[in-house]
Amino acid sequence: MVSYLNMSNQKPVLLSGIKPTGDLHIGNYFGAMRQLTELSATNKYKCFIFVADYHALNTMQDADEMKKRTRELVMAYLAVGLNPDNVVFFKQSDVPAHTELAWIFDAITTMPYLMRAHAFKDAEARSKEISVGTFNYPMLMAADILLYDTDVVPVGQDQKQHIEIARDTAEKFNRTYKTEIFKLPEPYILPDVAVVPGTDGQKMSKSYGNVIPLFVSRDELAKCVMSIVTDSSCARPENVYAIHKLVRNEAELAPMYAENEGNYKALKEILIEDLDNYFKGMRAKYDELKNDSNIVGKVLAKGREEAIAVSSAKMSLVRSAIGVS
Image 1 (cartoon, rainbow, N blue to C red):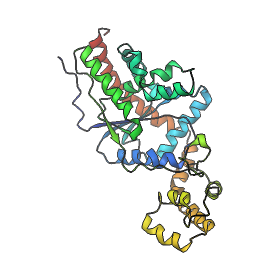
Image 2: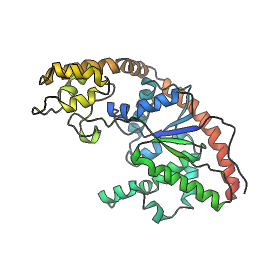
Image 3: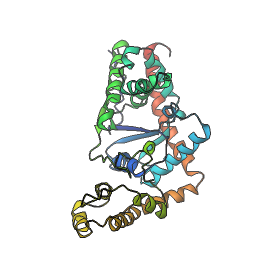
Image 4: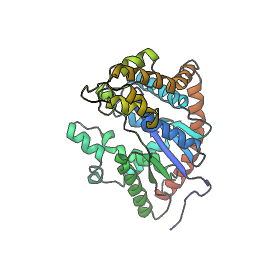
């Protein structure tokens, strides 16, 4: 058995993909963006972060919308502190190896295996009209992960199956072609991931219409906070408090909420001030980036070059292993 594992990179590889499919809100920031930005700044990992625009095609078939959302997503990550010098930040569609490898994986994967995927089961429960892209979603994701000798993939607890499928696929390919081209990735369960409640108390989600947008003006922020649902039977407005503790520690909040017990308007006004102060710098950076027509293209071009170099080297090994070189 011949080993093709790339041992030249001493740092473990971390990979994450983000779909450009909606307006970003503070739930996105506290749920993933902040942690990913902090991880990339530790210098512990070689980080590959990509805009998963081919994955987004399953739900978005509008070219102008795709371009707009992609640009907004890149600007958002730059605004919250992601340093493009610390990561390979690229667009999935700019790297042909992703779809090529996904097809190769399709050829060794059975339909019954993919039918066990959670995403397929969820889609099937909602509708019988399921696209092939939705069904094959795990194979493209496996290709995303395995192309870069990925060691860890940051995921929530409910997304571990994606990594398990990538591992199964790597093992099956290596076994089928009597090689060790692909290493087995591990899930990196993000610590302290906040489940951010929306203005109605449910999990913050665009589909629920309960979000506080990430880069909104102070006036719009105030409207969103003032619309947070409260329960007059409680001494403390729990929905307000749950958001507040994301930007202030609970030791600071305790006397503040005790002093304003029952005065929900005053507590909401304090939350407005704290959220505005917390995101003010990011909002200013985002507005600055909007006026730079070249920044997104420059960042993605730089990432594309390195992602293609790494993925092309991997695909040379794959093509040789399967006999199409």
